[in-house]
Length: 338
Image 1: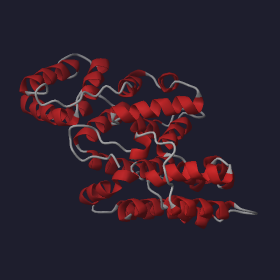
Image 2: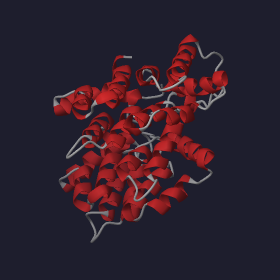
Image 3: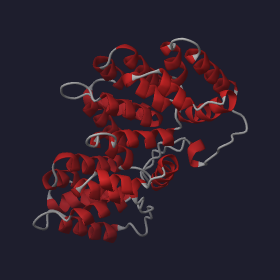
Image 4: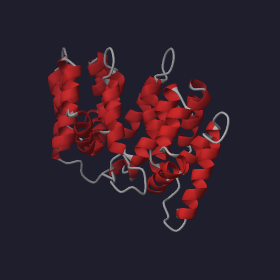
């Protein structure tokens, strides 16, 4: 995949086949055809073989899922995600539904679900938009429009308000600068420290618009240097500054953005823990996290074990039951063990 571990850009989550927009791969391969046949068999006739469906869909990586979604329609002349939606309901159904989609289309559907009904599921929504590479934000906006004939920015503007709308709007622009060591030098570090300070701690009330605009634009490598310089000059890191300046979901979203640039694996590990925190599990958040971050789950699991002395698998096992647990463990095992 295009997932990278360097720190000059934000990592990608979509597989290469999505980035290359390869709509007709030369060969799907026997594995893809076998998976399609297994899905068809599981859904055929009366009742659904849910275990068969879990195995067929849960054991695929992002590239295979993309190919299966294309190939199934080719072989059986039926849209795979519509079929899965009609076969299985509840939390299990939702997980299988997202797995039956190409990764970028699954995210567009997740956003659609997060905005459906009364109130917006902000906790599911903001991690999809925040902390993404410019290329993937571009793909996501185009995909959403193709699927729903609506502009994603317009939809979110009607769903959100205040500072949360500001941060999401800035992230939707896909304007993270490309890291250039000659441009992002010590002088630029100092300049950005001053700009960030003047938007927040240096004034009465926070200038959220310019604060978020600046944080969104800084590439990870440069942000690391700005964060260190900020701490040296003002006595605390940018993460601390955000905690002091902002509250509620906006604080969570801003910390998530910084985290995805400064320590992405630890940040995703914390989001998975958050989905399981408190009274009851946030099933939708947990499902979307495990599916969306499958491509980097190996590293996320290492960070999760370091931080919480517990694997992602063990956490999910403690929090979920039945076939919903089975599908989530299948996703984790596929992502980590391959």
